[in-house]
Length: 537
Image (tube, rainbow, N blue to C red):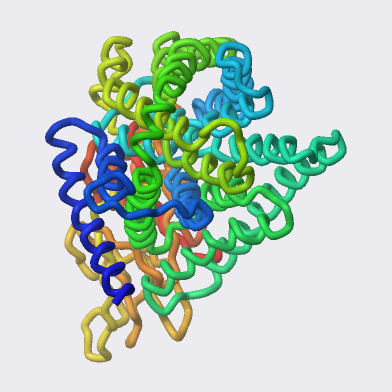
């Protein structure tokens, strides 16, 4: 009976979050706050009065959820959009996180009279901006920012969580008395070395598997990717490495290297990540006790004010100005330091590991997260307008690596009947419609990239390209090339450009439209040229 009640409760919660998410858009309140509020309704002092105080179980659930949020944060990062601001994003994600932890820790100790190590622990827990919160705000507001600032925020919020986790466990070990220089140095080395090494190894191996192995269907491929995301955290963690760092690295590499069935993978992880966000913020509300929130609120307000109006603006200016960041970009980045899921997870880790802390770290973090989302999250678009940082011609979705969702084509396969009048003809002799292109021929178990001179044979399986794209696992990969005025292909016809063997230009994305190219198609600056090649090329 208990299991049935649990299932019913879960169903009610998930259904409720669906409607709350819709309502939150209408009243312009971040959906993440709605999920927290729902958790409080079910909590100890809420309507349903569920007495859930198992922080150990909450830590396990939230850690699993954060794995997928971290992995998908990397998987969705569009490297081409990140490159112009990589140095700024990397600096803010690493040095910015460390400086924030030190600044908040010093403020907690000197101004709020906390124990010095506990103050720095609190600073470490809330030192990172939150990927889930930042992605949610950017996408919900369709907020495209100048100077690739949306890409900068995406990378910073995705890449800084491993550094915050590293600082958190380092402070925990120091509070537990394992604070010798040797122990701390060994901990830092293991976390960074094994996290990066195994992340790179798992990513490289996965790319090779995708090049040489065909999955039975898209569902099996998605299941395999879920296993890889889990492995990318579990393996380095088992030997003392930083699992979150590894998961992010694997996500970045796979998201920018894989092309097969990308749309299916994006849809899968988009759904999983949305569910994980609901889980984390609902559990935050469920664990919270309103009467304890009242006691923690003054500290939460002071820390939020110091962090948002003093620490982050100063740190952002000091770190980004030498990198020639525009003042408007610095201002927006300063205000976009939202706290959320990662801080919640790290707070539960600290609560479980050190149950006798003199501060109520969980409820202080609860207040900081709520205030951050409520103030910075709701006003980010307004601040961006005031700083003249909104790009009216931009599309924030290009910041995210949802490439397969942006290509409007289908791959259709057909087998050439022995009686077909195509047999013996070269492709250019067939007289195909202008908006259809043969992109692959499978002949006697071999994959062939065709051109106009390729002769059609009986029993060939040919793959035709038409509008409304849907990726395929039939032995081909897609690669994109962004054309600017200095590109060697600019203003040339397709027949005039030099394309390597086994590569074929299959589509051109131009001003939001899809062009199926032919030999006399002229390539223009701003085009995205998509090439088709064999998977193991």
